[in-house]
Every structure is written in C-alpha cells, then in structure tokens.
Length: 290
Image: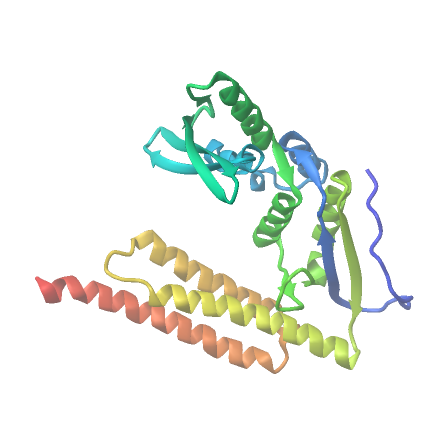
C-alpha cells in the first residue's frame, strides 16, 4: 500500500524543523458501505471500533427522507422493543392541503424488521431501511475521523468554524494513516507543513494550541459545575482523569504554548480545586440533611 505524500506549498531546506501540519479533509459526496469503511480502516491499520453499526431506529430516520414524498412521518410511540410511526398522506385540493391517515408502521429496534398493514409500503420501507443501515455518508466518515483523533492524536482548530486544524508534528505518522484511509474511500486530505522559526507561524501555532486547550479546560469546569449529590462516583473519577489528561497535554505542548502555558496551568489548577471542593461538599451534604 502506498501513501500519498504531504502537500508542500514551498520547498523545505534539509534539516528544517517542523512544528506540525495544518490539515483539512473533504468527504463531501462520499457514499460507501459499512463494510467498505471497515476495510479502509483495517487497511490503514486504524481502530475499526470507531465505526459502529447504525441502530435501526437511527437508520430509519435517514430512510424517512426517501419515504416522505407526499407524506408526513411522525413517531407516535416507543417502548423497549419497538418504535411506532404514523404515516400521513398529504394532498392538495385547490388552495388547501388535506391530510389523511395512511397507516401505522412498527419498527423492531433490535432486528430492524418493519411491519405495517400495507404490504407495498412495508416492503418499500424495509428496503430503504436496509439501505440506510448499510450506507455511510461523507458526514459519517468525518465523524469517524474526528473519533480517531480524539482517541489517538490531537486536532487544534485553526478557525472558529472548524474544518481546518493544526496537528502537532508528533502525530504526522497518524495523519499518514488517516490519509491512506480517505484514499480508499475517494476522500481527500490536504496537508501543509508548518516550519519552526517564522514569527507568524510560531504565533499562529501558539494561538491555535492554546485556544484548543483552553476550550478543553472550560469543558471540564462546566462539567464540574453541573455535578450534584446524584452524580455517580465513576463520573467523578472520569472527570479527574480528563483533567489529568489535559495537564499531560499542556506539558507535552509547552514548546508551542510559550507564555500561554502559565495561564493554562492556572486554569487547570482551578478546575482541579473546583472538582475537589465539589466532591467534599457532596460528601458533607448527606450528613447535614440526616
């Protein structure tokens, strides 16, 4: 298997030290089967676990887009095993729309089997559901890529709207794997190496990494603020682990952060203190109300 080389917008002298890469990918128009997505992940030696099977209920929501021509589809009931949908036919009579109950359709959430009193509609709905369960869109592939980075590397947004990211140099090999996967799926990734030692490049990398880590710390603090006496112990443990993980990132990227590291260290310390104080208050509250 061959891997395409990174796009280099200007020649780099031998021995040039890189801070990392600015990357962007496109999956628009990509439509692949679930099996093809798994194969692409395996061929690139990436974690296949990030591509989960689509639950029948979620797949049916997608199938409804194909089934909703001249009808309105609404969920009307759900229990542990089934979801029931009402199909309402829409027609126009002059300057008025009329709505007529067409049928009720039941979806088995475990097996994905569709049943309804109209055999033709049941067959059509089952075909569209089976197709939706197996198909993966470009948006699905993008979610897979983001999960891969969440688990195995770091992406720092370059722009508030997302879509363009800085990836530290230590993860360039991982980007190679993602590029190989996308190549199998007719997607594309653009990669622009960022050399160290340019004033604007160093500043932009610092800002991107610092902003990304600050947003992560803010998420930790907001989560801690929501904890109460009904918060599970394992949730508190995971919160502490996430804060420690972010601390490791701040240390690992100290070279990029420069004068921003001190600020991030203080914010992390505040997050740890807030979690500790919240746990102590939660421990005292039952005794106080006894």
